[in-house]
Image (cartoon, rainbow, N blue to C red; front, side, top):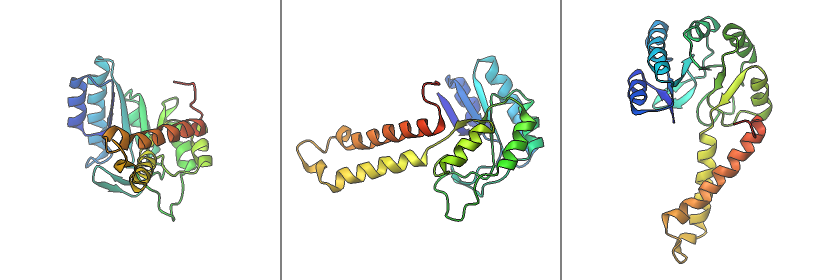
Length: 208
């Protein structure tokens, strides 16, 4: 069970609650030093309990928990300092954003990704905001060291579309079509189908 984009307090609570993985998002702290110090503390506490830790450098663009970002580029030197704390994964801004990408989005910065990878070595990198990034850019990012890709909006959109289709077709008015399990089923199946497609695109089939 993984906590995504947790505050310092969130992480401590989830560690105590028995989560197996936490992400401390210190990218929105007032200074990088605060991010560094709190990440170090969370790594120590979590690792004593066998819990993995994901950290973040450089805010991810878009909207996440009410925080609006523009797709920042992480500083390789800051990434190196966070990596040295012993984190298990590192989320780094390389121009990626949460939510739907605007038409004028500039794309991922592969120069930044290469520099970050050189700075952190074998540490697995995480790409947030995986929805809408062209497949060729996703695959290039993987080749440059991205090991985990977060996709959320994409799955929400296919769920919403399938659910809308069910309701607009009037199927909720047929027999017991109003049963929540029946209303949700098309959306659930749409998520499964899209997740399979993404797994093929990302090259993660049979690698769990």
